[in-house]
Image (cartoon, rainbow, N blue to C red; front, side, top):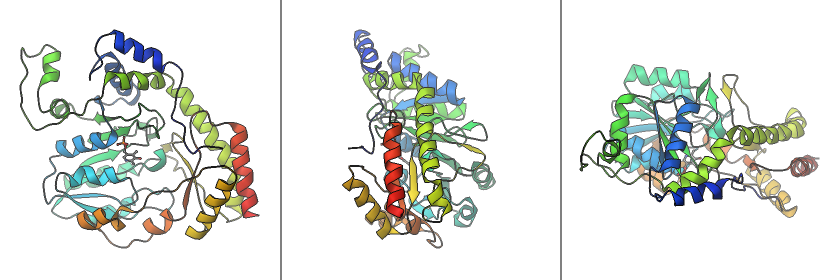
Length: 375
Ligand SMILES: *Cc1c(COP(=O)(O)O)cnc(C)c1O
């Protein structure tokens, strides 16, 4: 059986978790949390990174920091995970869904400006499959209209756009370290903060609305409740698990990119023959092989391919049910303009097994079967 995902494990995780325990501090912001924050800051060149309990929570923090209020509108693609929208719906926002580009499955940047109204507050580009949205265009629109940009870079750790790490371009960036992502702590994430002025408010929100972070740095002699907040900091045990992988990020990234390339080479003839479509990487984007997908002709062909692979013990999956067609999406959002690609392309997309340590011969087997299916 070839699984769809195997959570990354490098071997040092348990050792680091033992160290965290022996330090006598397994709550939030212990030594491994600090190491992870610093790793992200050094590798992405962001002003500040704060480890969080999930990417969902990093998005919720970004919504609070963007001062989203009831009635405000937030622009995003409908082809994304629920949390992208939910984090803003929790603040009372109305979601305005914009169509995607069929080539990258990212928000179509050329449609964003028309979707802006006087109520618009935030644009949320989602870097699907770790491939960047067209950020120059999006940042230009945001600055001309005075909007915040929150990057959902859940899938984009180690990816970049024109040399800038994903998650560092907008006001805020959100990473996921869920077990289905490239680097994992089981459940976890990070908030990346571009501007210094947003760092202290973010620390307060993450620490239950208190100025405890300042207190721990010795900048004040007692801490107190100063703003709204919640508990968004993970246990240092989880951070210890993650740090073992961040240390080996290059190796994990290269291993995934090798797998990605093997899939591409094995399936490119089917693409050339017009049978399937494969991911497209724009020239300004360096990706992280978060996923390898193909697009079948339509939903029926995709279902047959999933069943065929399953009959050979290979698990492949699809996602997302477009949010604007989901019950909560209908209630809390609206689709701007025409749904030309979101629904149609989402029904064709199929994700193939992809994880750190996926073997070459396993990929060969999958590639061979898909070629056979189309013959
Ligand atoms: C995984 C994912 C999330 C949620 O991440 P969690 O860490 O599980 O909260 C949000 N957005 C996108 C695009 C994702 O892929």
